[in-house]
Image 1 (cartoon, helix red, strand yellow):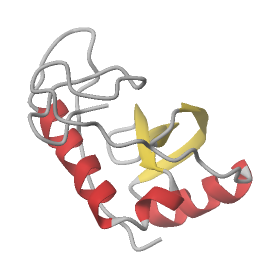
Image 2 (cartoon, rainbow, N blue to C red):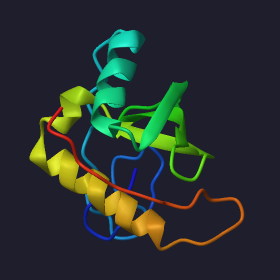
Image 3 (cartoon, helix red, strand yellow):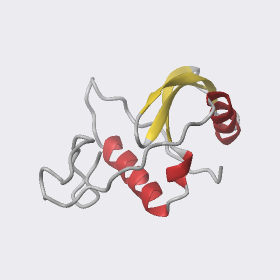
Image 4 (cartoon, rainbow, N blue to C red):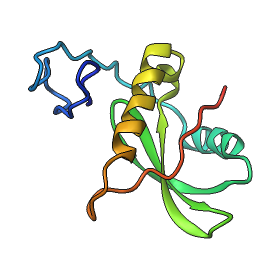
Length: 121
């Protein structure tokens, strides 16, 4: 997880940041959700911009889906904050900062950030 103070990446099991020693918040585990329902909600939120194909995996903070960007017909990974965390404004802000930080990175082994959006769902 990214440190909310300095932005450096820390292992998910870390209690404090390895750079600035700021305490890292504990992430509550995701309540079980039905995959079909989650994909249906994501399809509605994506509108016509992306075609959602299937869930690839996830962690304590978000799930990742395989999708296709309709306009450019290219495969994309779509990371979505877990619904129980999306209701928390602080978690939404952390997720946005993570996207901003990752968007600055350019490396052949790092997926580029192409888009970011928030949905009321």
